[in-house]
Image 1 (tube, rainbow, N blue to C red):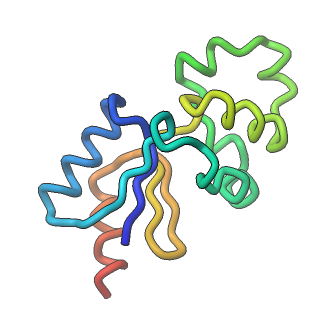
Image 2 (cartoon, rainbow, N blue to C red; image 1 turned 120 degrees about the vertical axis):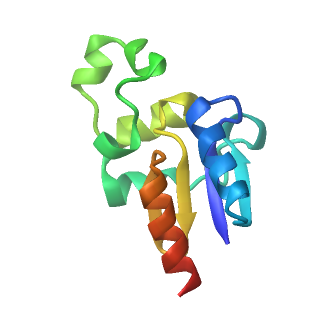
Length: 118
């Protein structure tokens, strides 16, 4: 089962959800805002991929950080900030088995779907 993490009003999340639905893929959606951050494996993502790949440095939330916060960013700081402001996380996050992907690209979703059905 695929778990898709994000925020329901995010355009990229909407595209990913539409793609999954159009391709008949069952998934569970976890909305950072509505469902909370308690069960989100944020610490694991940061440990495996590093804050540079987990946080969206083009987001409005990133731009709202102070220069000091940005310059001193590390996994521990990212964990605290993303738990408080989940819009810092690159969206959507897709988990399927032991695969985790950040963002949405149709080709990657197709590859993920192929792996999940083999």
